[in-house]
Length: 297
Image (cartoon, rainbow, N blue to C red; front, side, top):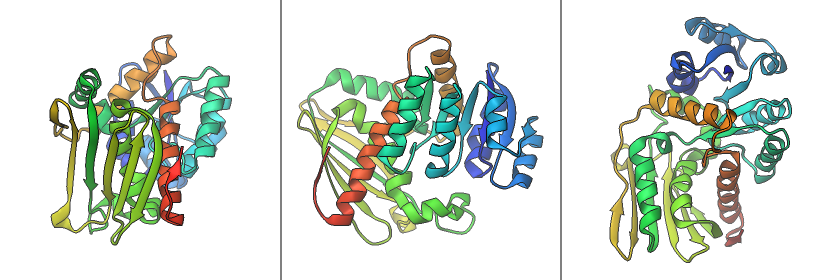
């Protein structure tokens, strides 16, 4: 499958480009970036061709992978889907539910396969945990703390303008929602509060009655950094296992899922429809923070 990569930042270097270059089922065709010099350098490093125009790269490939800010990604994904190209998108799909739904509609209309790269969901230990938890059932609540401290010297993600503006809600929030949604089911109500240092607290009420509590930040004090997640219910406590951060390995599995779906296999449970559901929840949290009320979905 011929792939074009959109984006040249640290995530493209750490995950997308090396995984595309290493995958046996991929022809890494080209790179487009907002900075042409960076696009040329990344393309040269991984044996691809730099492209000056978005639509030219879309025209030359079967699928796209995107490592760009959500609002930029949504526009490119829409153009690619309308051209019949398969989509491997980063999370979140977009910053608004409307933009995400537009991508969903275009993918459906043009029979486009899609995967959204919720990194740890593509690690076997996490996928096995999700499957066991779904089979167990009887969960009453989930608690997830995802606190990072990226705005420090030497952290490449701390230079990201969209992360500085949108914070943990939109960067690590998708990971938290993507973990609880398949286990506890659809969300019907969202309440959120913002504290100091980008600390965001979210309550999700799920359709079957369970409640999730999410604590998110990208600007936590270094001593408070943590990634803890657990489910609580009739069978006791189930703690989400820690996994090593292996983005290239995870992206390789995302590529497997997309290629399989495009070849007539089952659609990925982490497709753009799921990605849009996550965006809808996060947008409701932002709305709740803004006007101080619970948002019904």
